[in-house]
Each structure stands twice: as structure tokens, then as C-alpha cells.
Image (tube, rainbow, N blue to C red; front, side, top):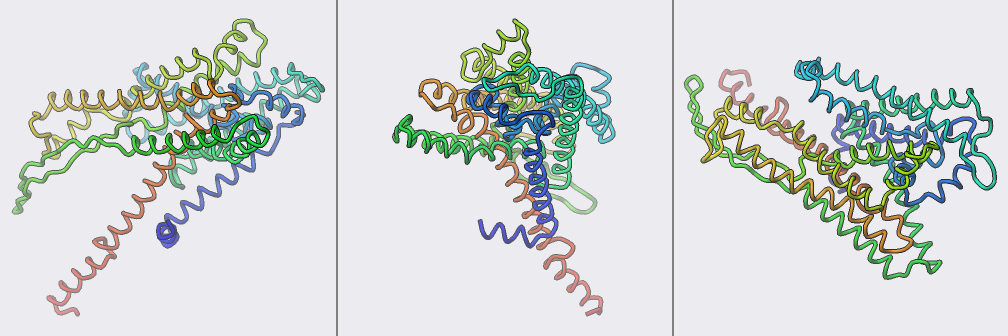
Length: 449
């Protein structure tokens, strides 16, 4: 680890990217502690203290504690993720958006701009509903909103929407100029921020006698087992063998080579549980705040740990695993690229047979990966229901740990790719030793050295 850190520090470009990512995370964490004007945070904290292990606790975990403090970052990155889901679905169903998406980088920029506009609309709607609901919220010691009315609603909509747009901008900057996916790293930072308090809660319960030592040990053993299982599956690959035909370029003849096409078991990564959580939290949060009978009933049914929530959540995770895999991996495009490069899969004919084979293989891998995601996300909440006082399972196990481990592995993989790129440049690149050696030999033959 010390060797890797030293190598990162020596590489200026990578060092700047890591420092920029940490700086943006610092800005995000500072914004968590900036409350929305007009809200009594003490009264609000008492309300959310009673909601641990429910939908509010799950949302508070994703927002890094912003919900319990009702900060300007209370919506977090979720409006942007929800907008991304909607735009990706519409790009598959609306022919005009599909044509725009296929226009290359320019089309992707237009889709990104539409996603930003939709993010603002979603943030405005959610912030207004939150403002109205806070005005109606009461605790035993008083009201949550100090001065309810139109001015409070307008102030809440403006500040919360601006905060959501700022987080969206932070995520885009981290993706472009930092290391890893910005939106995923922001969610991961919120999850990490809740871990110290969760660990202290375990020791507090043990000290009060509400949780025996054996249960606490089993909790950490279970957490370790979940992490190991996630790492094992996320690193799993199906290596499809590829054979390159003999090629003649000019006067040179290139012999056929054998390599492989790596297909991950979990091609979709951590996107399915994030998408599923955001979709489930949107209607349930509105139902929990608003005083509407049907929404109140839905809010009572869709709380983390209920059988209906687990079934729908597992179904959404499986659906988004197939959906996101279909978007990110196209067997048709892969088959065409292999044909252009004079490569083929042994015992499989190029063209339609290659497409069918890759489609069949990807369906098998995605099925296993989708079931794995559903089990990891749902099983901890099922176990938590069977053990009293273990509501912290919602943070320790399942979605939180999956996102934390998955994003960490992706970020480390990007850093390792940068380090490998530097080693390649140092050995065979323009400024490498091998390149300098070739120049010396060529120069000595020409009488220059």
C-alpha cells in the first residue's frame, strides 16, 4: 500500500486527480452541515432519531446525514440519478432521442444537457414537497418549521435545488478531472460518513446489554463475509478466447495471435441497486410526508425490511441489471469490431453466430450477476428483522456495503490503469528507456553520436 501511494504521489497527473477528488469530497462534506434557513434542526433531529432503520434512515445514509440535518444538500445526487434513469429509458423508447444518442460525442453532450434540465425539474418538485411536509410536521416539543408560509417554501425550493445542482456539478467535475465516477463516489462518501457512528452504536448496545457480545461478533463476521463475497464476484470474469487471423500489411506478415475477451460476471456494477433505491425512495418519501391516504398506505408498505419492499427491491435490481447491461454492452457492436480486426471466437462463425453466442453468454452471466446483487441487497435486511436492535444492518450490509466495495474496486482499477500506463510509457513510450536506446542505435549508425 505504501508503495502504491508513493507511486501515485510521484505521478503528477494522477496525484492532481486524486487531490482534486479529495478536495471536492471535502467541499461536499462541508455543505452537509449548512442547514436550510427557517428549520429547527434540533426538533428535526429528534424526529429522525426515531426513524432509524426505516426509509428515512436509508435515504439519510445515501445523503451522508444531510436529511437528518436538512442541509442545502438534502437531496444529494439522487435527482441526477433519477433523471439519468428516465433519460436512458426514453432514449430506448423515443426514436428522436435514440438518433441523438447515436450522433457520437455531440449527441451524448445533448443527452447530458437534457439530463441536467430534468434534474432541476425533479429537484424543484421534491424540494417543494419537502417544504410543505415540514410545515405540517410536529414533534412532542413543538413544530419543525419556525416561520411557515410562502416565503419558507420559496426559500427551501431555491436553496435545496441550488444545492442539488451544485452536487451534480461536483460529480461531473470529479468524473472529468478526478478519479472514478463522480456520482458513485459522492454516494460512497455519504455511506462512509455513517460508518463510525454505526460502529459506536454497536458498542453502545453491547454496553447497555441490549445486544450481547456474540451477536456483535456475528455482525462483524457477517460484514466481513459480505465484503469478501462482493470482492470475489466483482473480480470474476468469463474469458472468451479470441483468435486473430494471419494478416499481411505491406511487406510484413503478422502471425495469428490468441487472446481473450473479458466479460465480467456483474457487468452492471453498482448501478442497479442505486437505480432501484432511488426509484423506491421517490414515491415512498412523498407518501411518508404527504397526508394522502393512498400514499400513506404505500409509505406503510414500502419501508426497508418489509416483505413487499424486499420483493419489489429485488425485482428492480434484477431488472436494472439486465437493462444497464443491455445499454453498456452490445453484442452486435462487439461482433462487428471483431470482424474488422480479423478476430473470431474458435468454433464460432463470424457474424450472426458470434452475435448469438455473445448474447447467450451475456444472458447467463447477467442472470448470475443479477441474482447475486439481489441477494446481497435484500438478505441483510431479512436477517436484521430476525435480530432485535440490529437496524444498523441497513448501513452495514446490503446496498451500502455493495456500493462502497464496488466503487472502491472501480476507483482502484482506474488508478492501477493509470500506473500501468505510466510504466508502459516509461518502457516503450516516447521518453522511455527502450525508445532512447533505439534512438541511440539509429543515431550511431547515422554518425550522430
